[in-house]
Image (cartoon, rainbow, N blue to C red; front, side, top):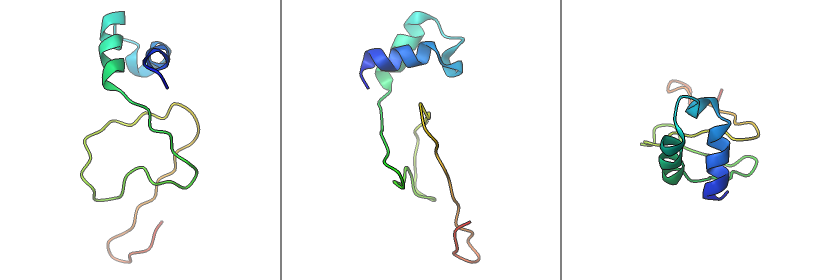
Length: 73
């Protein structure tokens, strides 16, 4: 996804609805695309992460491993 495509996506997004054009451009420059394949893990539970993830298309599932059993829900 190019910077122009990210900017176009932001202009249609509820996430950036209150931003003006310049604010959207600044935000778009700070963003990057991460394309996941089916079954690929985005982040592991317990890992340190300071990113905001936005699903542009498709579906993202999540699961959590309870500490007591070690089994996935």
